[in-house]
Structure formats: C-alpha cells, structure tokens
Image (cartoon, rainbow, N blue to C red):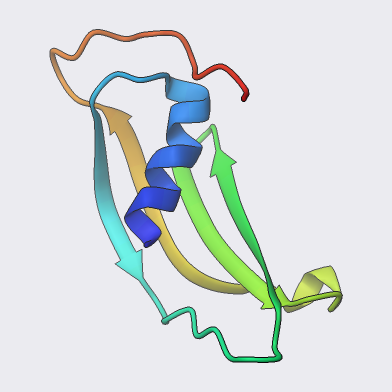
Length: 88
C-alpha cells in the first residue's frame, strides 16, 4: 500500500538504513476500477524529506493528478546510513 510506496521512494535517496515515516496523511483511497487504467506518481521532495503518492486516469493532463497520501521520512536515530539502493 501507501507505506510500501513511500518507503521505496525514500530508499532510492536515503539508502537502506532503518527509516521512520512521520506525519503520514492518507487523504483518499486509491480506487482501481476495471477498464479505468490509472497512472501512479510517487514523488520524493528532498527539501522537506517528504513523499507524495498521486494518481490520475491514464493519459489525462498532468494537472489532474489526485493526492492520495503523503508523509515525512527520516533515518531512524542510531541507524547506520548506507548508500542509496542500486537501480535494478
């Protein structure tokens, strides 16, 4: 769900140390309906160390993305920082 998406986005930048999600806001459910393909956007914002999960109907204009969830992510105190995850 949303937590897995947020952690995956944060690991791309913060590496594989133990992460903490703070202030997780679930604003609306992501409803998937047959015959209605959706595009998903998971965006990391470095300045705030936040992640946003958004979606829109496939091929719709960029300004139609709907915000579903957001959260702040930090490396847990005492966790050993590591390098960012390698692309697969």
